[in-house]
Image (tube, rainbow, N blue to C red; front, side, top):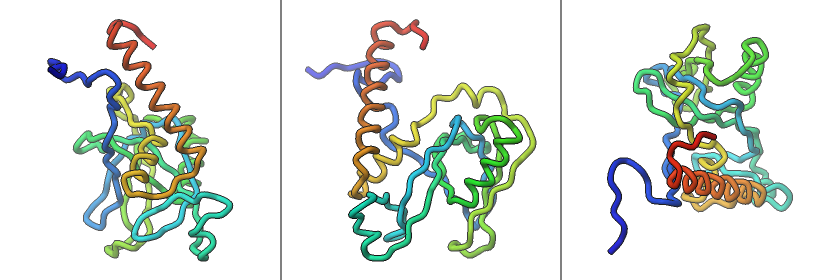
Length: 192
């Protein structure tokens, strides 16, 4: 008989984040987000088939066919009206804006921004605006998805080729989470 648990715990070794919500700027309104990541992760990718695909570096099929590469930044966030946790990805121009704001504020985590589209056209650029207000303290205690793992699993589900270093990094992080989960299962009072 398979083991049956009680409560909201996951089975030992289960990945707590197996599906990720990706926030996107909308033509229908403004997203207000609180950053939960200490810093963004970045990757170089190509826009193909309506989505970003990772650049595999030398020998990349997309580069070989002349599809331009761009830097993308990815962070964990919470949306303030629904309090839903997820991720959002920005291009280089918004990444530079965030860097400037962080240099003045001191950290990314806890920063509040508005995200919107420049116009009603879905293809219009994404705009961000800093909101000078503290986030509610409970946001900073939320468990957040690891952005690198989210990218890896999202690309994997879409059947995309991934750079080897990202695969290895994601495998290491997943293994560390499983080990931590196992330790917490055995000793729930343990603090990291």
